[in-house]
Length: 219
Ligand code: HPA
Image (cartoon, rainbow, N blue to C red):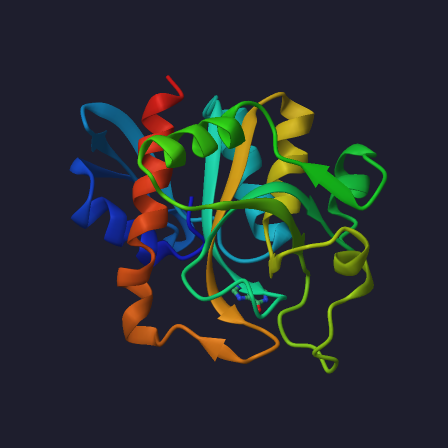
């Protein structure tokens, strides 16, 4: 589950076999196809906890989806965590009230759910791909006046910031499903380096491959 509908289309068009458009409500495309003979669905979450909160809840609840692997980009909080690095999210922390409002889950952290995180780690090892494991910050804001690391992210020693994992994990926890978040570093906040727009699509290929290879090992 990428954030961007066009990324879902890219994966369907270029990587899945026999993809079929199964939903396009609100221009958010979902495709079901096969990857190495296994049926897989790819579709977008939109940006932010409210958006992934809706799409992932409906997938789990209405479509009986058992596992969602979010694939996204993130901003690294540390100069030594560079562009293109992959992060498998152990727990997401947030200032968001999503989990408390929706389910009464108190606290500012939400762990990954089920076995998807472990399977991603095992799959990366078997493919000899380097990934980091660690905590990330699911922020409700993208643009802020202070470029420093926000207190909640300092408190939980976050490697990087994105905007969705906290709500995805909260939904999965409430509904007893598996959920993971795999991220590619697209920008390094302290040094202001970023992946150029034309290199973006290509740079996400290792993450997409790892997510699909992991998804087919979940079965
Ligand atoms: N902030 C939040 N989300 C992000 C960022 C960022 O800097 N980069 C990629 N996703």
